[in-house]
Image 1: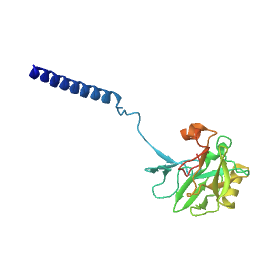
Image 2: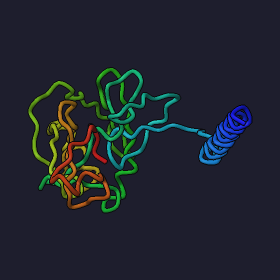
Image 3: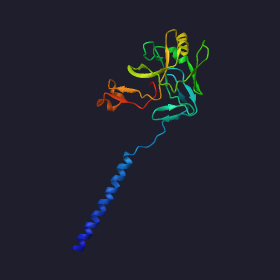
Image 4: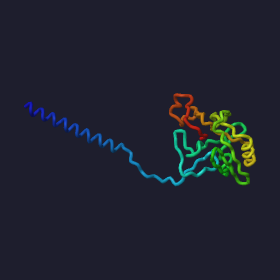
Length: 199
């Protein structure tokens, strides 16, 4: 009797383990997401200045701080056009911005636009003299790129503008006024994002 009882227990344990293995395998396969081909990347672009024409590249570096040129320490949207009051200016209100072509090479930002001379601007990568400007109402820092490029932009756009560069040492913050940017905003008044761009 003891022999029969022990065999029943052994059989029961074996069945339980087998059924458990089958159930776990089923749930794993059911929950596992299958990769699906939804498209093909045909072109890559980096936009050095927010709202201006992009630069086509064959490859780019993608990091937690954003995308940037392989051979240049300039991120996507590292530059921004601002108004005299420090607020950003985008193509939504100034459509001619999209006519400005840019190029980045050897630490120089080159600007070109219809009816305008080509302008080379030294990128102030190591500058620590930053001014306060605003992106979507949020205060951030920007390094002014000088009077020459300011005059160039103002002549082309027929209004006073300046160009600023986002310093590599500064992290832009997002406040809780727009909680969709971070789940942490519900608990913290301000979240420091690891970004060097004017998105």
